[in-house]
Image 1 (spheres, rainbow, N blue to C red):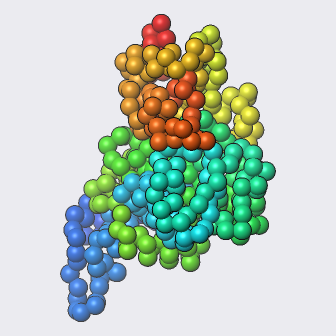
Image 2 (image 1 turned 90 degrees about the vertical axis):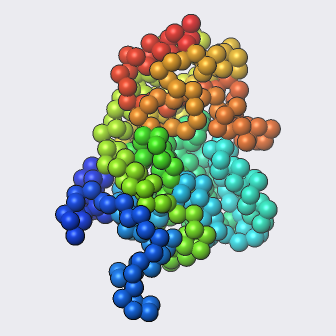
Image 3 (image 1 turned 135 degrees about the vertical axis):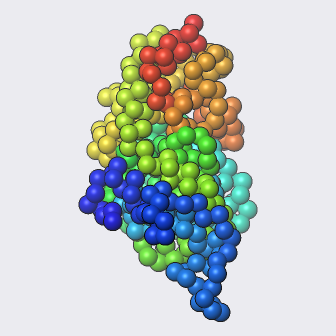
Length: 382
């Protein structure tokens, strides 16, 4: 049995994944079933009734992600957006208010601006790197302070412990989107967060072959609400998707070390280029959030953004001329990706206060040979 005393890599490989009791299979089976035999009317075996409610493969993933975040309750969803939507339904009602990052992920912004606003949920953007900005954005109806750290795509850093105190003093929950950092680099619950969300499509899955999301919480009452809405709305992870995500999670620790190694080398190279005006990476001592990131993160991650001195056309040229870096959305896979956030992942924020700079390039640094990655960027720059 795996316990909280075991190290991260041990939990990633074993938590929720004991050998199959029937066959001894060391890999969790894919339970491709919609329903289960009952021993009598209403007499379920181990609580299994219908796979929207509970499935053994999904349960294994939920136990694993909870263990990796140091939490008590995990929930697996069909996507990160499904996880976010379920949390909002479980916690908020019409007339409530949420504080969001002023450089939030475009999909999250679209959810608040175009979807939940229709049923009366309001929001205020605030700078997550400025605790006073968060405090000033809170009002009497605020139910959730919603932060990313690092943020997507500007890689700003939020002080989780300080913001949790501000949120709790106002009677609000603190939700941390931990997708960019991954559970390996940061565990927000230990710093005072009430809930953690991931797009498990990204680092958790790690191979760009599955879409998913998860929530992890400690509070039993909140977990009961999430279980109810997860079952009622039904946007849960299917067994094959859960199995793929579990497979990816097993190597999360070793992959993140290589992502970080490569990202640090690429930042060093980018800082040497006259074409680049700014490199955004919390591992750089020049980054305004570096000290806080060093306090709450194991390392600084595989996501790097940079701004081109000659503007949008120069940024587009770099994005369109790489060959090892793949031009594409998403992040966190073993392969390196490059994108123009203003026209791709964050296009939904165009014309809003959350619009991202047009000269910005975002790269998800993979685990290839770093010399090949640097050579590819060099030819794209030229």
